[in-house]
Image (cartoon, rainbow, N blue to C red):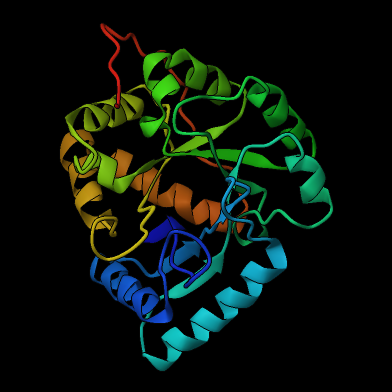
Length: 254
């Protein structure tokens, strides 16, 4: 199993505070059946700036530490980029780090909104060889209230990744239901842990995939797992025709 989104690098964002916690996170991931973890520290989210070269160095150091611990898990470099106007320019100057040097880059929105320039930014990204993967859309207030925003972005070439813990109900019943709606409408293409620690934001990959298998069958399970492998290879993803979500009523997260 591949985890495409994890804050496992020590001491650089709101994930693992130190190497000991990074190792505990890796052990938990292995227990969940994960053999490859993409380290995705925050970048440009008003608190953290983790640029390409710094991430590559820290990934190498963590892989060495895990090797010494005899843990059968590999760390792959990536980045979780808060959308901002100069993203493409910074990619061209070498500051943005797509997953494993593939075309795919994880992007996040502010928790309460989708910036108005997003559609134009995604268009420019794709013109420059980058394919955006929107992380945890199920926890974005504006996406929840106006899911057609997400539909339009997916229709125009973006992909999305929901959080395993969301599907397990850790963020509440409404977030779990909306996560299921995204799956049913072909509006999400990956499940990842977005793990930050081993306490309240831990890896729930096995539980989430068990839910997918029981509720949607082996074919959907295979698509999620295969897409994660394809991302690391930089290939073409499985993508069913997206559908619009008809919301009977809106709700607030807060």
